[in-house]
Length: 291
Length: 320
Image (tube, rainbow over all chains, first blue to last red; front, side):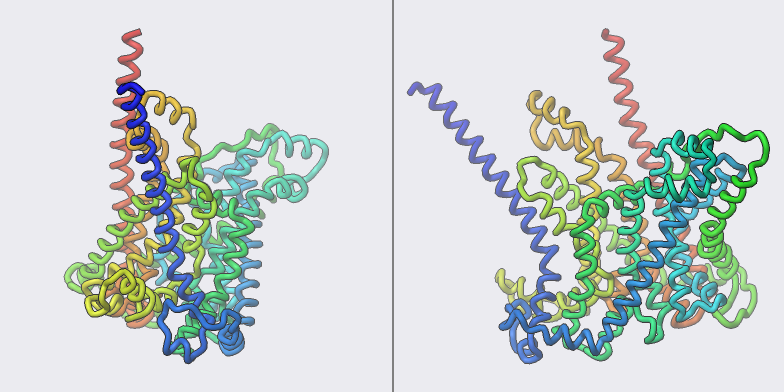
């Protein structure tokens, strides 16, 4: 072999080692990030299977002796009244999602398909609303809820949750802009009413937008805790968030039991995420472009 | 850009179409009513209340700027305001990390990127109260974090009390926020990177550009808009940070009370609604100020790059 060929082979080898090192580093970085993302949840998961004695004596990172010890789950389910909390949260999610989908699609239909005085004004009112940080208005919103008799009222909470949302309207507006207007035009010429056009023709066509709004709004409402803690303090209307919040009372520092409750609340989000992963990612994008 | 869209041309509008009017009114009235009830009415009331000395039940009358003056003279409030600097620092780290992970996961040669993406994103979907318990357990003396740190050789005696020690506890809380939102930022970046024309990379590779040059010349300009929006959202989010202090920090105990926690306590614990409204007004003004400043800054930066681009294009034309 000539010297020149040797040199080429050496540099090729060098490039290959460099490539292997870079690839390893890339995977290491990702794996480290995943480890950090999972570690807090993983430790709660393992702890939820530990008996009270095990919890007291073993290290927090030690694995449970019996992976099938579901007694903490049973205890938190009955003593924490979690079935009722799940049902309450489920009904809030169903109602709020249904109302948001209907309101968002109807308003978007009107704003996109009809030219009328005030169309621009309504759009601007909703746009300016996104600039006012909702969090700053919690104090006076509380007063309005109080005046309306909505403290400890599940209906009031549902109305509040449906009424403070602009993103679903925005997602529907975007969707209607890409739906061909010739479709409803011809239906109207054939004698269909505007109501018929909306409910029979357009609404079924917006199914992808409906799914996106339902998933985003559903997960958001399911996880909402600030207003739930503020407005639903009575025991009869505990959502999952408020039920979870109250655990620090009866279960004090029995984290093995609390962790079981925490894990139970993660299951619905996890299932929805696994099924609608694409819609979640897509919805995030359209939600963040709103500014 | 959001609500300023196009209205489809309505061809038949010779006389008033009552059916049309009915549809418009029926379909728009409920959302508009709720928008007024939960956004504009509270907004107006907030302005009004901020000049009053009042509780939820009693109004002791107009006090002018007293509520506002108190905010800027009491050290307590200014200290709470300064806590948002921790969260801003966290937001910068979070964005850098999210961008790094997004650009690595966007590489074609990484296998299983879908699973990694899902794992890193999932914390965003965890219930806030659950995050509170998970991290209280995580940070407890001798528990999860301490065990891991001991395993890599750091003795327990040299570790602080993560949530109690005031020299570190705000960083502990900021970390929980980064943990929750980093994956979400990353997903947005991955989406933006995916929309970049792949032939650009090929051209760059042929031209002999290395990874860092490719990142600077192709990826960064391609995700400019998303990056800007993420930055604005995280900075304004830092100003009104409350979640970590509320759920992990036991309602702002041990000097972790952010400005929003102060507002919450002022209204719902001390029942000083007027004072709380003035604080909320200040918070809102700060958020708007930061939003406008950042937008102006980015407009300046972007115009600048567009100008140089145009200049180059003109030069090229002139050469032709």
